[in-house]
Length: 128
Image 1 (cartoon, rainbow, N blue to C red):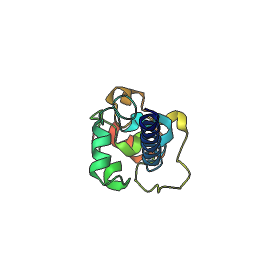
Image 2 (tube, rainbow, N blue to C red):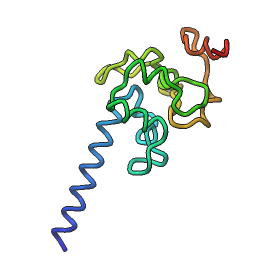
Image 3 (cartoon, helix red, strand yellow):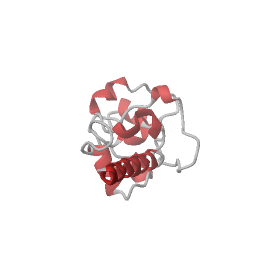
């Protein structure tokens, strides 16, 4: 019984570390934490952004930034404050964390506040 408990704790620790490593691969990933890629926290099914991120080899790049994974009308990059997808793991997170939205939750896209220098914001205004 004791061995089973130790094994279970090791599995939970490994999963937690795995989730944290993925959060660190996305700009401003800490803001929404596991919900950036999952429907209800780590271990729950992946949301549309999570499916796209894992389908992209767990790599943040301009292609993923230019997609609107949640279908809410705002590109992933604009939601994570890296519209061009130029952020790299280890870089300082871009922008103000209070302005970060969740690219896997279309219900928060109506909160998108256009930043003066956001080309994605201009495209939204022009309906492109």
